[in-house]
Structure formats: C-alpha cells, structure tokens
Length: 370
Image (cartoon, rainbow, N blue to C red):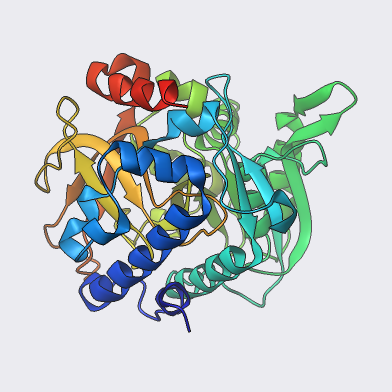
C-alpha cells in the first residue's frame, strides 16, 4: 500500500503529531512522482535548485517550491493523460481567470476516504432524509466549477428528498432565484424532515437579511444544519462578522450556531477543512498549512499573519503538492475549547497576488519561464 493511500486512510483527522511522518513519506512519494511525470513541474523545481533528494525530513516541507494559484490560472500543469482524469474542475474565476484541475481515480478515492472520515468526525453523515437548499449553482454539463461539484457531492451526506438551487440554469445562463429559495424554506419549516443548506455565505446572508427585513421568522425542523462554503468572493465588501451571521441565522431560521458549519478549501487544494464547534478550521491530517511573510515569503511563527501556503500529497494528476493562495491568514496553536490539539487556521481575507510586490515577482518569474 502506498504512503499516500495510508495517509488518507488515517482514522484520526486531527492528530497531526501521529501523522507527521506518514505525511512526510506521502509527500516524498508524490514529489518523486510529479518530478518524474510532469516536465513543466520538474523545470520549475530545477530552476529553484530543488529535487526530491533535497526533501529529507518532515521539517523540510517549507523547502518545497510552492506554485501560486495565479500560475494555474494561466498555465496547464498535468502529470498524466487527460483521458485518465475522471473529473475536471475549475475555480470560480471571479478574477476572470480559472484554474483547471483534473482528478484521476486514485486521487478521487483518496479524497473519498478523507470525506468519509472528516464527515464522520463532524457528524455530517445521516440516514435521515433531508431537504437540501443550495445557495449555489444548479448542475449543468456546461458548468465545470469545483464549487458546483462540491455542493452536489455534499447532498450525499444524507439522503436527498429534494434539491433547490439559488442559481438556476436557463437558456442564457445562470439566473439568481432567491424568491424560490424563500418559498422553499417557508414550506420546509412546516414539515418534519430536516433542512440542510450549503453554498456561498453571501447569498445565504442576502436571503436571510431580506427575510429579516420582511419580518419573517421561522424555525426549521430539528436536525437542520446551515453549512457554508466558497467564501464571499466578489461580495467581500458586504461580509459581516461571524457572530453577527450566527445571530441572523438564529433570528430568521431558529438554528443555533452549534448547527452552523463552514468549510474551507480550493480547487487547487481539495482538502476538506471543516470548522469545529467553536468555529475554528483545525488543520486535518491530510494537509498542512504554512504561513509565509508577505514580503520575504519565508515561514513565520504561528500567531503571525501572512500568506497561506497549502500542502497535500492527495493528487497524482496535477502537481499541487504546495500551492500559494492569495489569502491572508494566521495559524493558531493555542488550545481550542473543542479539545483537538491540531493548529487552526484563521482566514483574515483575500488579497490579489498582483497587489503584493514580492509574491507577484515570484509568480511572474514562473510565468516567464514557461
């Protein structure tokens, strides 16, 4: 059994100290694979004077050259034939450019193992049928966005009685239908089966604020869960504090913050980060996070703000072992009331790589070398 497979079968999602060596071996295994099978990736590593032989221990994770997500939005990096990629997904492309990431069968099976274990830990699996209210895109053959595929996949945590989408596909593309979402919530509040929402927090907020302004206050059936994912994207200016969001959810839907769950991830880093009872994104055993200084790009101590560098050995088909996001964050290692020892990631906000001189220069260096 490969080290990658062993890692994604690791049964304790947040016991990093127990999985560090396995994570190192899985990363080493994937690094060697990518170096051998992706000529462009090998060129990037060679230009940085780095080879798999230089990756000697867990502490060397920060030495692996990262690739900015910006690079994937301009160039295609693949390590195998596209025919072997069962699923191809793109980023949301709010900046106008989209990353295209493909997943082969083995990568998908590793991801499934992860989802099973993380979902079990957070009590997301249920045999009780639910109504899904999805603040996102209705599936379409023309829609390859990862967020759409992820939202649809979420509807398998519990049997689906129905699926209602905020963004419905029409002849001219997607149209936002919030009125229908409101009608469905009012209808399901009178029924017995739980409701699960999933999708963009901005759309969830806009509908709940509208309902609050209209004086609409309901109580969703017992067992209902409000889940969020995908970030605020182009609506970042409208973003509100989490505590205010939880109060709004309780006021309008009668669901307390214990049943509000948020996810974090990226198409370039398909690891499931799920917040705990105290709404902290603990780093799971299947990935690692390095916070880097905005100017020097060197790792900073936990507790300091910087750019978020995400690492995972999950995927064979694309060299996304170490990617640099355009998100600012802080990695906390102080004790969390939930009891898990894993550090937790606080996401401060998004900044365009173009606005960061040193990081942009690094990305531009990679782009010119193509």
